[in-house]
Image (cartoon, rainbow, N blue to C red; front, side, top):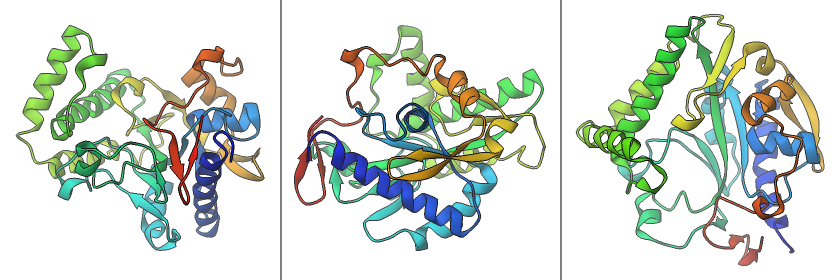
Length: 283
């Protein structure tokens, strides 16, 4: 099949399973990031995108976590952070559902370190947690998550310092060195505890507690994402935040304008993606 059509079909199959499970158990999910842009701007996937993202509020995610392992069909698997390399390998704090009959990277020591589970198409699941209303409390909550991420990076297969400035390299190196002295399961447990600490409070805002540190600036008004609407997406309709315009504006600014042509290309794989039975999906 031409282009990224098979990739989109695989990602859509996962999204439909998430939708089915959530409808069955009366849970809510939200298309997120580029997948939400796709729903709004293209009524489906962004034509050149090769991944998919959803978000869930903490209560919905906890409910999903209880039922998804038994509900997902053969060929899909819920992969939790902290489950790699015998519980000693860190990639990020993001749960994901992998589409097992796919390949996105060359075989390597790094892929083996992560048990081969990062060598597939997947749908990321980002978690929205309550953000303290006070400025100091909000800054502290995000700062703690960023710090825990830095510690957990000590359990990565390797650190890529290429994207950091010199001060950032020093900070990341120190945090990772300290983190290597701490069992990853302790860091993971503390990350979950701190993310959930305000879950019983009706705060005005939410934040993505398991985003990478450079995206922790994103803060959403609670009303934007606790109510959902269905928007057309490919051959179905999927759940989106009722305040999708506010969410996309907060994250991307002008999300309606297409990027330059040279930026319209897949960004999450190192090879032409292999999907279902050996056919490569060429971008």
